[in-house]
Length: 115
Image (cartoon, rainbow, N blue to C red; front, side):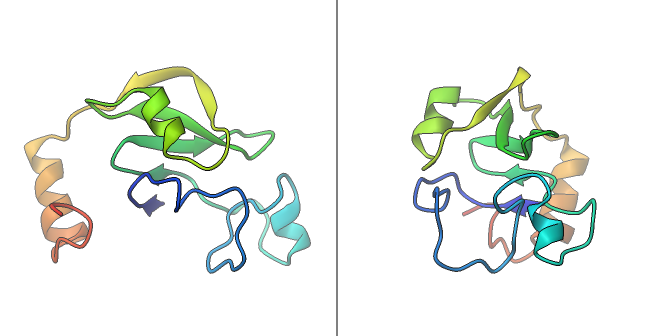
């Protein structure tokens, strides 16, 4: 899982350096690069949406959009064409218990949450 702001400068079509490989050029590319089978990113969580990956093509797709945003906002802040899930849902608001876990265990120094 990756947590990052949604920004076209972060979501680019081509990069010059990869620190953490995703699905690279598509199906089978991770294995060809010597990475373990059946691995790769699961979700990308941004300030606008939750993104997943198409099972066949391994392309990034919008699965859930946060309150106050629309698909066009997410797409405009991405340097490549995003897929749409069959049903894009509104991201549920976190419960008080979930917020406590996020703030105290996931990001206690508020590097991501609360900026």
